[in-house]
Image (cartoon, rainbow, N blue to C red; front, side, top):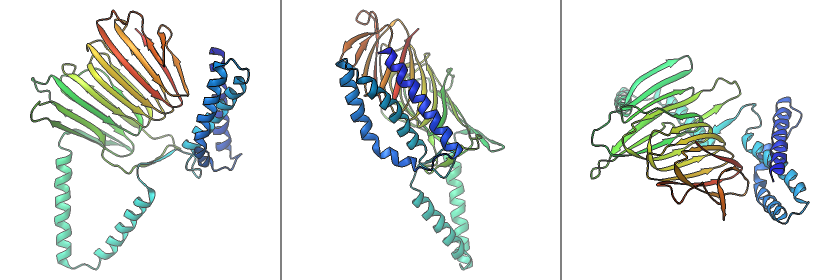
Length: 361
């Protein structure tokens, strides 16, 4: 099985590299995005491959090679949906809607030239209202500077002494997302962006006084191109390690370095697309529940040895590395001494074309 996994990843990486090279060199003129419509064939081919492997049929070698070519080709089609550009574009809303807004803006500019002085006064009042709204929306920004084409912002929320539980929600598109060393504040976040801005809101439950922190992009319609290599999107978060945390992290493409080893995390949800995620968990919570739903991702999870860990895996095209875990069937694995461990953790992993590695430290 290990040899076949090595064969799959070797051919897959080779195929993906050749496709990128052929695209940049202009050797092939193909509408790559049309290949994405063939994704159901991957499921059929993966099912056939699994059946053949279980039966020890030598034809599994052929289906493995076919998968190793088909999977990166389909993924390449998804990443190359704008074949007229060398870079990678992302649209959070339909382009037609953005064009309509641009057309409306142009029409309004022309109409303004014909308006009376009274209409101009109304426009000035509207601008004042908009300025007041922007000031209110950014009241938690402590620093907002621009260095060339990169905008840097900071957000801080003070820690209330009575806070015993807290909820944190992080959303992002493409870039690098970091959760690291704790802070004496409830949260301290720094963003460094080439495109767009972030906003932070903190709502406290009137009954339980549990704060819900939400950090997310302020612009729903973002289009950017990575072909010039100058794009930067980095979000760094520091949390207070006193409360018991419930976390919900939703990422698009990029990298997630999530060091939660010093935090008591009772519930963690991670959703990601084409991403590389390195997650380090701690032993401060008696019972922790981790749910991961990823696409074409490589995920490494670090778990303390004193914590009994159960891994429940789902997904047809997953490659797992769970060396010292015991396979108990049905896609479920247990760490050594799971039943006797005083603290326990459950990791539910649902992945598409993904790799999962669990390391006990």
